[in-house]
Length: 62
Image (tube, rainbow, N blue to C red):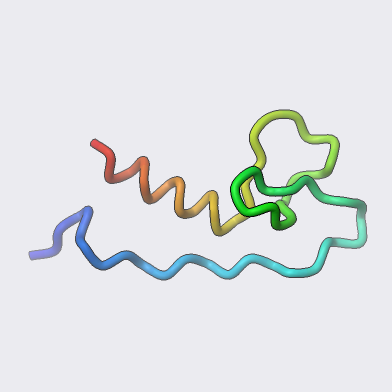
């Protein structure tokens, strides 16, 4: 039987290293890597890896 919030975590997706050609991107508020959001985006911005990790934490927090 599989536990939903098991002790072994799935590997995080890899974040793209290059900034897209359509303009500068906002920095992740946790790791400072480029995000999928434009630099003008308001609010908290997370890179794909940090966003995935945050979703894992909130899914298992009860």
